[in-house]
Length: 305
Image (cartoon, rainbow, N blue to C red; front, side):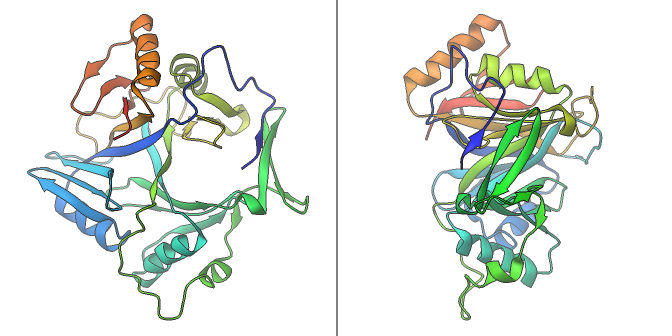
């Protein structure tokens, strides 16, 4: 996708362009119920299950790790996960994923962002999910004067949030298509979108400290995008739960952390050195180096597994 911005997108230090997202870790109230949902509704494979934890995905590296804790509940008006996004390799695979939801009569919200085709839904515990595929052949967005503008390839304008033509998408599915097969192995976590307490503070953390490039900063929408390597966004940031929203309590379901995957040790060490120099608290874990952004969203820095 071609994205243009009139904000400074890069700085003296920029994160390695091959950096991407790894798995998302969620704290859940019912491991059993969540496993059933992700297997049946989203066709994730159960990779492993040990005690109160499980890993799911497309058959390779985990895309999602679930950890059950007692007496958890959903809170509103707090920072944390807005949604994590599973990126499908093409329209056909997205169509199959959506057809599965339709067959189960599971509520979802198909949306055409022009540059991507997508649908939004929540899991049974209220964690937001986006399923999408890239469609740069349909158009792109630009950022000018702090506002997003989406243009189709024919030059016509769009607000980038149109209803998706589901019938047209479903034409990519064969009549005898099976809907019970696992998601394709190419499926990955394309991006994550976070609720934050302060937009500028969040951008300062992900851009000035970690080195992600700013792909869009739109105060009018209380939203910003950052990414590596020119991607439209690996991390979305918003203050839609209210400016100054507190972090979720310890008994809240939702995001534990998400992983940022570096292509090699050198690129990881560069960012860790910046974290250490900033004085930001960090913890070495079995998954990588855990830090928290100013809104207490957990971020694990690691080499791609």
